[in-house]
Image 1: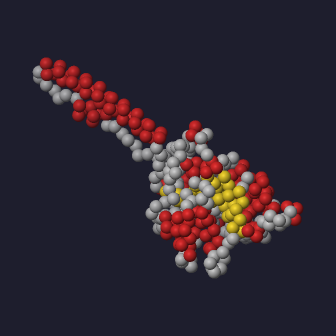
Image 2: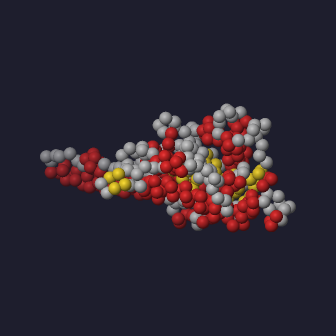
Image 3: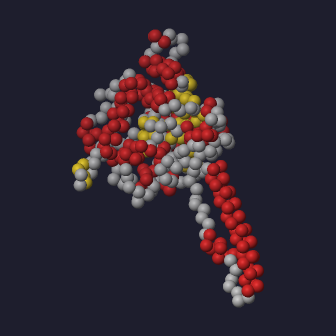
Length: 384
């Protein structure tokens, strides 16, 4: 699928060694005046030719950079590279061709999904929004005033956040439903063929900025960020953020893999088995930061360099999507002990002006903000 929109990307620098070019074209010294004169004229013509070649080359490179974009391995990509879209191109984008997808299996995942859609609505995302939910959650024959809490939340998503509701029947071919098998529901993104591209996001997360620009990436069956926190031991992709070009062929291929999945497989394993060598790389900066990064003592894999200085405020400021991952601390809607939180939260390093607790404040703020949004959007308190 081609688009008439372009992203800024990262390009290898192209340098011209002007001194070397001139040395190659300048005449060699001569004792003959006429020879020197002839060669000066010849040299002048050659210099004009060289200048023209250099100017033309620079112009072509400038146009190439303006009209072409690409993504390189995000381990070597500066923060936010490729994340900016030329605003002049956005006016002609048909956003109805693209959609963010979420799925729900119970009240908690339903609430999380609606929170993502509330964030997209608040952030003025232009793409469609699609929610896959169990058929039994919403009975269209039941009046709204008599609807269940789940049904009311679905209707709120539809009416307040302009979400397209897609009922599904969940079955696993005789496999017992559990968090592992339920994660396969996310893979139904491959079957949303009414869209050119869909962006499936894990909902146990915080969305700080919309990611509409990802829909304009170069064509690829799947695009994902690396699971940078596993580097260098494992070089695999993370399925927290998954950009998919739906097709019946790929959907059937994915479902065959699910049917024969190993007992320990999650959706991330399925995707890596199929697309590890073929997926387009989305930079994890700023598209896939995990909360445990704020408590880590080694930030090289996230920063992409051991030389860059970790700045938690800058990391939070550039992040578009932050995924909750702080084992053994539970997910933010589930009960956890204060002692577990205190043990896992970032420490406060000390310097000559005192304690530096910025990372700890950001980390606790992420959990507190999630819980506040949960109560505001879903009217659900944190479980005790």
